[in-house]
Length: 113
Image (tube, rainbow, N blue to C red):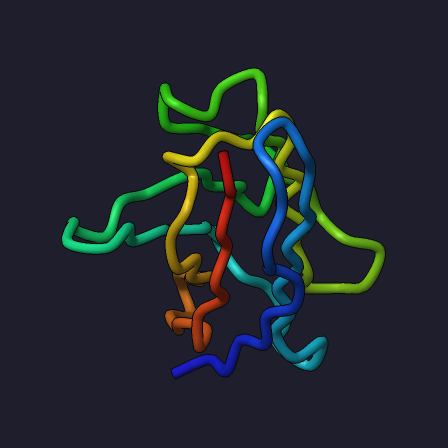
């Protein structure tokens, strides 16, 4: 299991922005993909965005055009830039890696109307 460390999150007004970061050990030679999931209160965890080792990104429809997932400056880090936030973006956000696999501890994001 890969240990992932997350930073960011917090409280923001609707229309605002937040950046979430996720880092795995730079000693890991390569990570096939890294993703962000979120879980709203009373709902199932859902995939928000994924970035592959080659830099290919995919987003769930509800965040397309508002969220941007990119590789960070340090090895095995990713940044989720979230713009034009809506109250429905509220939830706990989790970073996940695949090959090798791991989950972050989760970050709380609250968007007030």
